[in-house]
Length: 301
Image (cartoon, rainbow, N blue to C red):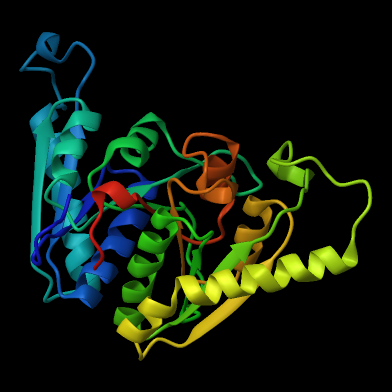
């Protein structure tokens, strides 16, 4: 679904530190892109209709107003000239946000810290958005961001969806004045902390064959982004061919990046399993925010 030229960046909030990080990122991105920011708090209280209107010290509507007002103030502190629209909606967050995504340039969500090792796990709402949203979804980890590195990273594998992700990444790099690191991951395996390998490890390595495979990967990478390089001539491009487990390789390549961009479907590899271990772990272990792009429902820019 193609979004209009003035579609806003939409950020989901709920008053938590995770959503505050998401507001910060969304406000910065909307400012850079010259778009408006829409803040949405969707809530569905348990036994909502049974909550007494006169409950001392607590009113659900007042609480919701506070959540969106605080988010609006936070956004305007970062970008005083930003056009900000904020609203709270009574309803299940998933369908509310899916409706919002139909008119959004992108949908920004906060991920929650789950362990002391800085693992971030998208909740059920975030996973639903990754599957069904009509626009790219940005997942922001709940930790203090480091200084900007002026670098965006995108993973490509030659698939149509990866090319759509690359298009989105080129524009993101252009509006930020950042370099773009384009990474493709060759066949390989690694167990480490990301679980079982996608492909069986080879008992022996044919070095000549590996060199040929690496050269073919470099050729595929260069050819696949040639059109985008011509379209965005100001973007400085770094072409990188990695080997090993896709999640491990991509997260390592993103260590010094401000943003990682991946496609949600592809020709195997990191783009092949939206809700499987690969995609979940890219989001959970990325050192920076991750944009997930779906070719069938996203427009570039």
